[in-house]
Image (cartoon, rainbow, N blue to C red; front, side, top):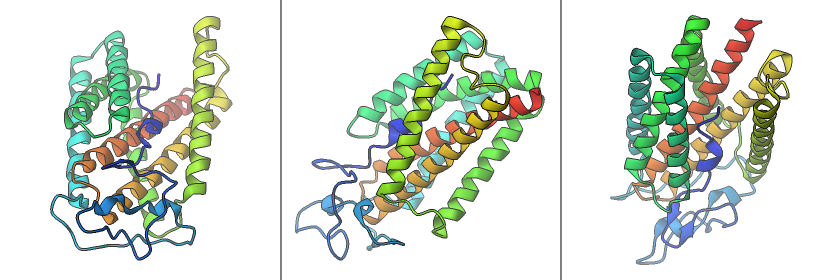
Length: 279
């Protein structure tokens, strides 16, 4: 069951009159605002057509998002996930309650995704319930395949570091075309997952076979690759938010997106490892 979906977090950073999307063009010379205006509302660097693109960097302003803000909020959110997972693992939370926690986490993620502004309480609550689900699921899988959760954690860390290095060295270039391809692939992936679940629910077994055997391995690899692509989108959001002077509260949205993506990658790796060790 997929309880967190990085697709929900792709809405851009909020601004005074809406959202920073892919259709706005950056002002020449960087995000220079008119006197008294919002320096972040000047435009969106995704619309830039030249590559490689380095977003303009201006002097830090009070009340604007910084990298330290993003790191601190992400640490708090991931820390909440870890605490929730540890509680569920130690208490051996039943699978039924874990699925309930996953549903609550999904609802909270959807509510936050459609809010105009990030809510720290909602994000941390999502992280807590997501942690309960992950801890219970990881405990069950560890009982069958000892060490699989730790392998998935190490794999998630490796993917994160690898994508970060590739992004910083511009081996991965995030532009509008990249965004369209990733979103299209993600929608297709989720639709296939939903169809597979329906077949499994009404027909029994593994549905269309996307969760076991050779097809399951292929599907899992595609899921991890999609997660890596979403990480690149997250890094771009953070970079652009800092460069364009996003409000400091938007660091919570950056933490929310990163947490959802890392949970996605962990779940796909955990399932992939289970399939490989079960064959």
